[in-house]
Every structure is written in C-alpha cells, then in structure tokens.
Length: 223
Image (cartoon, rainbow, N blue to C red; front, side, top):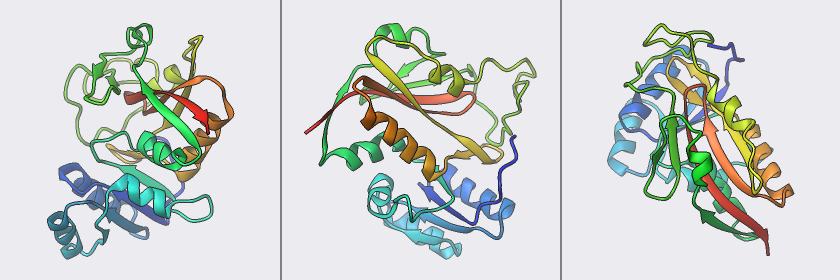
C-alpha cells in the first residue's frame, strides 16, 4: 500500500456494513482525523452518532454538491454507496451549465475490460478478480493478496491509456487510506471535472483502483 500523508479530515459517504467498517478502521488508523459520516437512512445515522461519529443525514452526492468546493472540503472522500459518486457529483455540478446525455459504453470498449458487468443505469463495473476479495486487502504492488500470483496491470492506468475515436477517458484514481478502504482527494474530482468540460469528445468517466472500477459514458454539451 502506498504511503499517504495522514489526513486531518475524512468524509465517508455511506454507513452500511462496509461504511461502518471503514469508519471504525479509519478511526483506528487515523485517530487524529475528523471523520464525518454521510448517509440518507435516519436509523443508520442515529446508530453512527451513538458511536460518537459526526453524522449528516443526506444523500452522498447531494451533500458533496452543496458542501464541496475547491476552497472547502475534506482531505479525503471515501465513497461507499451503491452509485458512481464521481459521475453523480459531476452530473449534478454541471446540470445548470451543460447538457449531459448518458450513453452506452461502446461494445468495443466493454470487450477490453476485465470481467465487465453492466449496471442498471448503463454503467459498467469491472474487476481483475474472479473471486471475493479479502475485505482488508492492502493492495500490494506486485502480487494479488488472495492468489499470491503477479498482479495484472493496474486497472486505473489501463483505463487512462484507453484509446477511442469518439470518447475521451477520464479517470479518478481510488487510493487506499487503510487496508481495503479506498477513496480520493477532492482535487482529483475537480481535475476530472476540468478535463471533462474542456474537451469536445464524449467521455468515458471511470473511478478505479488497481483492481476494480466503474465506468459511465456520456456526451456533454454547453448550453
């Protein structure tokens, strides 16, 4: 696992089974950090508050839209909700200035992805794994934690290098703050946003770590 500067503040989006596990692990690994948990379920919010976590009861992407900007935000965002947070935040962020039309990920792109699965909204989930990964995998550089075999090409790098005549790849890399717990800094979201609005191409927006990822395809046009 790469060594990152100890965070002072963390927003965790989602407090289900894995979100709660992430909150506990991050509290243990980064005891000096201010941890905020965001979840839309009032009962879950009450349970997390009872565990002495700071809590906001809101949809994760909506909370990001209203509270995240380049001057104000956490050191790290940990998305653990069943949506592609980077895409939803970007769609909401741009809806007043741009027309975003979701499209299908081209078949020729899907065919290059490892173990692709199409989601209900057209997104593509992908993974190098053909098994259930250990929840606390430290994501080592050279070998797979589960198999002990050499790790395939880092997925986020593969997606960044993808070529297509009509679509431009934009990738938000997920990095680990603790074993099995990944996220990104706000700067990564704003950099992706800037890349999207500066281009004339349709976009393949992905969030990915070394092994797993999710991709949305869309066209963007300024009003």
